[in-house]
Image (tube, rainbow, N blue to C red; front, side, top):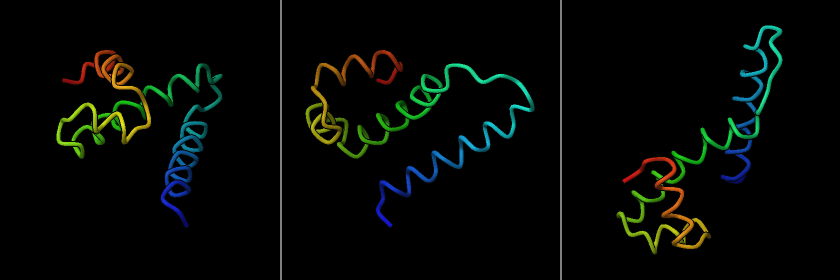
Length: 78
């Protein structure tokens, strides 16, 4: 099993728990909820692994350095 499929499995399990815990409530904005809860720890972890180097972190993430800066500001990550 690849690391990507491990991550996908973790997301699936978390979403199954989320739906189970709704107890009849109608779910809304699931995509935004997941992205907001996943993006910040991804950014923090990759930035730490890159030793705080934005250029390296952006390359590791496969995004532009300016995009990374914008996302760091959005999530209030220094």
